[in-house]
Length: 138
Image (cartoon, rainbow, N blue to C red; front, side):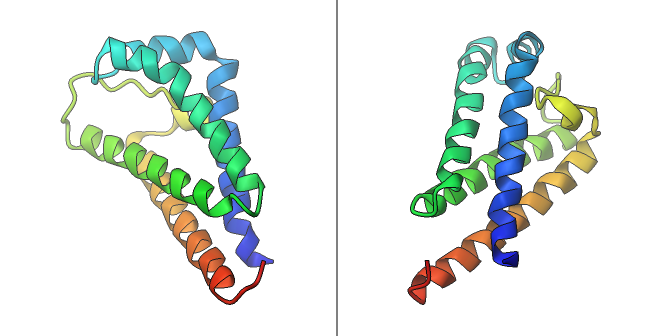
């Protein structure tokens, strides 16, 4: 049962992330338009990120697709974590947080710790699920 906790927490994370972006879409759009990676990329990402987060939720929700969902999830977490590290290293002149919801209220260091914790959760879920598959357990 505890092995299911990891992917369930990831479902909550990605659902919350997507819904908070969509619920405050204009704010999210404004924040993405002033990101350091450029306005055009930001305008593209305002649609791609919530969609990808919801696809990740869907994949994590079905046992036959869960491994794929975990790989997408960890990829997103790693990309977001690298972005936070670059912010903490003062790589970007402008650093608006377009996370949405409660995560937007965190500082960058707590946000980094939060992401690292979810990367650990994601790795644990992957190891546990792959171990079950290797043993023929569904």
